[in-house]
Image 1 (cartoon, helix red, strand yellow):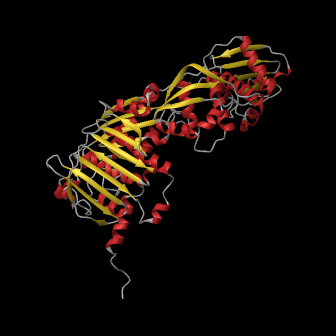
Image 2 (tube, rainbow, N blue to C red):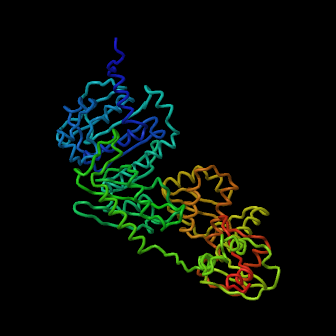
Image 3 (cartoon, rainbow, N blue to C red):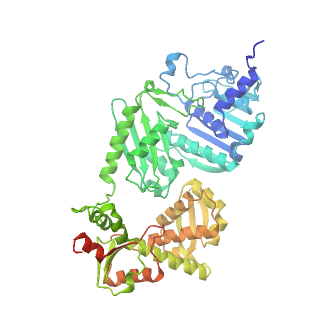
Length: 563
């Protein structure tokens, strides 16, 4: 007797459902796609316990005629395509006819719907694959769907779900994606029956970006629009590396939110060298192309897409995005003092002098503590960014910003260690707009922030009101606070205690209040900075990089062949 047998219907449905419905956000995604395909103008969503308990989606779209209700939970039944040719030119978000059947297989789902072409509505429900007969009923135009008891018959999958907060943020990410692509739709989002995100329809993507991310981010938004022969690409981006994380990056293809590793790589490569190495930037890219150039039937959940003309798209992105950054990015001159010194000692007409470069390495010191042992002969400023000092046998070049920043941080730490944190109540409260994720994080860490001297309250899901600050931060503007909160959030993936948080904030304060590159200093200012650093043994910046370079007279004489 053979070993191969045909799987029972129940097993097949369970496997198929597992491919489409991975977690609560999968249900949310499929239901919102149906609402959008039904031409909804308003969509209401209520998520309970991160979607693990219940998800409700209601819209004012076209609705479902009563005769179609009985077909809703039949796998591969759909109104969106009719033939193989239709797959080649898909314009709707949904088309596979699997979503509702998959949801019904792993939950209890109930649907009220009324078509605008009918005078009566209908109701149908299904529990874990068991479908009830539809019934006529009175209800509003549109569709109202409730999904609950998710994965109750699929304990293995249920055990692998994350916390309610984690599942909620997956849903929130998709909500923002839908609202960006379909800015002409009202999205009313509720968390555990409480209003969370009310996104009214807007006239443009830029208006929707501002309503999601706030004015602070919008002020830094840049955009590019380019294309070629039926292909249009629109990129919005923010190169501020401190206020965004990778979770805020979106790629849309014909308004479908997708994940494409090749595109993400191309975008990163296009800006390589124009941002700090650890910098992040927000990008939202919209690609519009002929549906026949796409394959959206790659993944059961429709989250991946393949391009037939990917090389054309990638070449356009690299050419235009990199070209834009080359024209607008702040260039770093090769003639700055540190590079000049390096070049001097890596090039000579007499190769024997520096053979192996060992003598150069020993002659140039990045951390020579004996520099102030003899009297100062000469002090000047280079490029309004570096301090050059000469004594009897050496010259030293200091990075004025890094030096000032380190000195200021050291003083702040000493003050914080020796006395209690003082709070300055603000006569005029500061209002700070931040991402909704940051607001949620601030709620959870409010006690720690209060212990650090920050008195604030939540005004809206994206705005906080700051009533008091530690005295060191009392002159911070709302823009500086926005960046400080953003930086703290970006490193919050690791657990922080009060001490670590306050140290991070002191670093932020030191950076903002230190002497900057480009600041013109007097001789007295320069000497005070250098003498303080030498006295306290401060030879690295707050990030661990050196703050000075020392060059000996002996090295100069050897270079000019005087020895």
